[in-house]
Length: 124
Picture 1: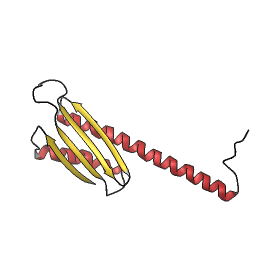
Picture 2: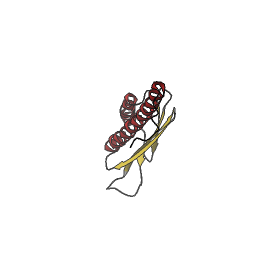
Picture 3: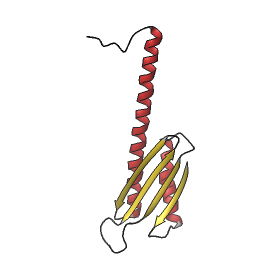
Picture 4: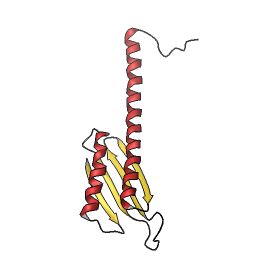
């Protein structure tokens, strides 16, 4: 997985970059493909607010038939990164489950056809 990091309204320090690489890199256990690109943007929403949810983090995963997006805002930058990582991981697991379910249904249909059963016919 390739990770591209962009900072908006803040300076991208090595500590922030390392933290993002650690958190987003951990998503690799949910995604088997190496061709996936993670576009990560961290920064501040506004310059004039001093309190509230001023830091944001967003992740966009693309590649290999995958297109996932998540965004979060928090008063702490590192907490925003943690929240967006959890949200994108949840989406990745859900997407993986849908793919597996579709494959299992297809396999069930093929197995029934090989046995000679008509599984498309409704039973009373």
